[in-house]
Length: 280
Image (cartoon, rainbow, N blue to C red):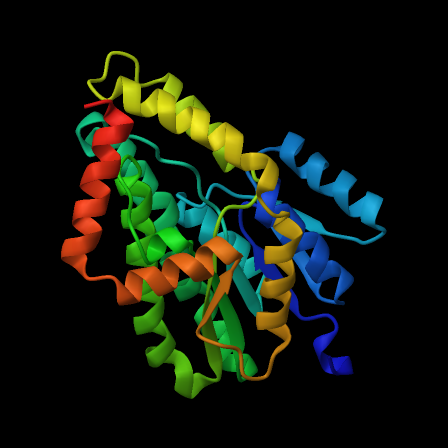
């Protein structure tokens, strides 16, 4: 990193836990002026404690990313050179079990908000002669499985929007990057468990219980969010970042299978897996 890069502002949303928290700390270590958005003072204190334990300084800003006016105010305040759209949450449930309000909240947070923040940040990036927009997607942005369709739909949408934006802003020196993690130890898995607990009475009840059990068993072998944070930092520091960074063996394997296995075969496998999960 050159001396002029050292205090470049990078704004990371959803910074109070998991990948977001690991990212703001890692970026501060790398010399960026790292700013994390959180939704409450309690969450801001959590960021400050983690930064203090790591021996770095991370600034925080209160922000609900679904609040358009608040987004505009935060971007105007910090004028970020780099934007890491990380805010999100689990949406676990069969499509039949999720109503419009729940789906709308997911879309507002994980699709509309990242694009809004990018749109707001682009004028100052153009003025500065360049910038970075890193969108935290998922392997679920490339593939699908039953019972998490709305979450996957949000990530698929983010992938398509990011691809369009990358072409639109390339001439301005702004690089748009997708980071696609597999399974890592973050709070999203507890959110998934909470979602499942709230789906009482659903015809998919046996499937939810099996899904919850599988999630609990998988967590001990998942990687650390710091691995994803290092990839984000690499994308921000590279003069020529890749368009996509798959993170984790499961993500890389899933992406290969998605490309090479015919849709008809995937549908048969998913149907059989769903029947096993449902106990049919």
